[in-house]
Length: 204
Image (cartoon, rainbow, N blue to C red; front, side):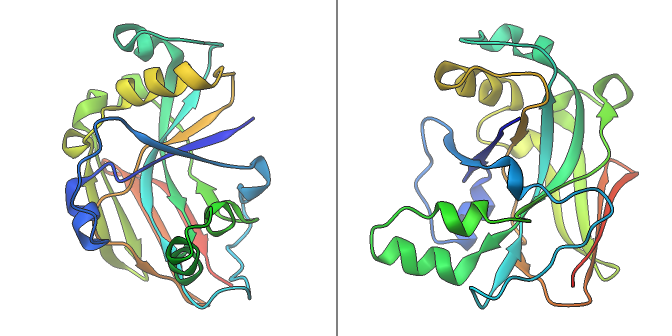
């Protein structure tokens, strides 16, 4: 199982990170499978950075083997969606960027990916019209709508398959909307897809 993710896929989020250029193609990065938090476990704040940000995203789980998938057929390669959290060591990322170095470690460290309970897409609105949100300690801090994506879910699946053979169980994080922020010990994160709660996560 591999984890692929999309960066800068919502215009307003790009602005909050001072990125104003709209990419013509999806920006793809990856996380190792060891980044995935086991179900029922908390997010343990590491000691190698000062700030760890939540990034709430729609996550797709691939359920068919696919390579060079046409965008018009991409919907056939996944049947379930959820909300996940892409954790980022933000100050470490900034230092690495300033030095022109790869920043895999700030996105792919152990525990850098949380995934909620998957829901069959037939029980949800069309994939280009799904609302999701995340609460931090009971207050909504991020809200997203897949209609606002710069690159649609089907385009992302198709694009990823040009470079990687997609296999059953692979996860694709599709990008975060505006509203990212830091987590601290004893925080509680709760995420919804539409009005369905799918993820609750403690921070330790």
